[in-house]
Length: 383
Image 1: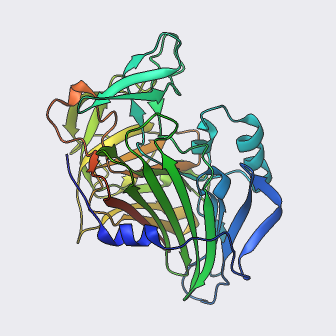
Image 2 (image 1 turned 90 degrees about the vertical axis):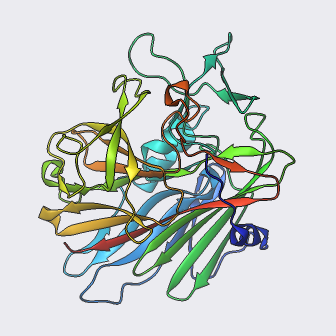
């Protein structure tokens, strides 16, 4: 298991965070999600030749979930970067239709996942509410929040512990060239589901050339804890023609799964070279269904870059993993939908599972008083 201690992250988390808002930020006074006002960061496009990001709409009441990102393309106008319903429909999903675990949060826009993404398996408690597992001899009792659609599908715990968590404070401020939102969650032990005590800071930055999303975790408790990061962005296909959209994925292995209902890893990582999962040089999605966890991630100058290109729309987005601790890429792309979800994860799926043996699955060991972080950057371009 890898350890990552980031002194800068700890210092950043200690900065004062207020509930104020820069005057030029757009609030949505009539729209609340999770009991907190929706916020829109915005800037005006100035270039007549290159695409620029123009807005980010986010929900502090749902752990800074990003509901939408827009970009201006010269001669085309505003384009939705994320596949997400409009704000009114998003509010209905999250405030009216969602379950107790917040599972609809990862069905739109881009939700943040912590202290673990993807699936965690274990023993189901007799009342069916808890998944019992352990880390280094310490018992973990996780919410039994997910299962496949097939009869008898195994119940597991999915996508962490903040899907339905509001931030404790939020600040929006102007920065050179754009705006930034900072949300802080004093998570404690996440209602008894996790070890130690954790503070989480989520930073979302809008500039013309890039959108940056960052998470900083600090162990403010008295014992060591495992942590992992990811997010769940649905990237839009502006043309609506999924078959010709091209994906470039810098991964040499894909995790074998039992089936696409459970999506549990068997512990075997297969080489992608020459297979239908080989996107290392970029190719069209066609009609391939994907819900896969890719490993052996290849960095270029320390960056893990995934590209989604929609040739018909003359549109492309690059998703850059800037953290050294990116361990896996989860890709979800159903053939009937006009999106692909690309999740830069710091762990393999089901990281505590015995099927992995002695393999390092990427869980970060965070000592008391130490911090660690995760950072992904988006760029848009004309291919």
